[in-house]
Length: 316
Image (cartoon, rainbow, N blue to C red; front, side):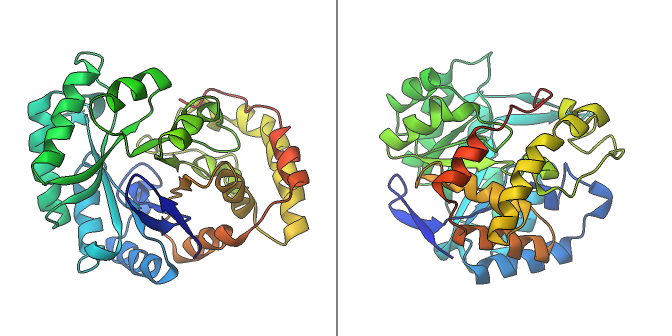
């Protein structure tokens, strides 16, 4: 697979990474299978994927253990990204931000154990906690680097002001936010900020939680599926957003590519510092996603995609 140099990490990573949350939570949870997912992780290594994304809240906790098993013996060859700062309250199962320094320190120790590594390559503050000043949380995260437990730090779902405040304390190596053909908000400020400051931008849900592949039709999602109740996955919104799929499909035919590959190629075209992390738990989708790294959209293709109407429905 083609690679992208990440200045803030001092190394290259495969142009397409792997989001691992769906192997343990959030999507089609009745269809989880650890052994199948371990085969997917092994195949990802063979295909040149070197950025693997997980978090303590995924499962919760089970996804880090799974990723740790799948990447055992390969830690020196890959970038393992994990996150802290979201906690799940029981028994309701609701998630909430927690940027308390003590929590972040104990969460890091627990993640190290579950992943089975001595150091986490890239550690994200999963969400900024409105009850804790960002500077307080970020100082605690920087302390994890000083302690040799983490190599680099990142922030999720933040704006330019928060990035500047954090970066003044300790370098922001990466930002992770949703970016796709139907979610373009980060292009205004955050993606350019990352370019200027040598940070990697990780695009999560680059396939629109599956919608942009053209394979997700009107259906009923289980209550623990993240798309259950999501405004963009109502029958009306999905029908209205077919106009987006029609444009992607037209360009896909020009390149003999899938809709998903065109969607990923558009994300990759937003900058050499942009690395999408599509998730899958199936080998054939993994292989398809990896091939998107070799798809070169023309200027006309990009102009046509950029001219598409915004998606109907809020993203959350």
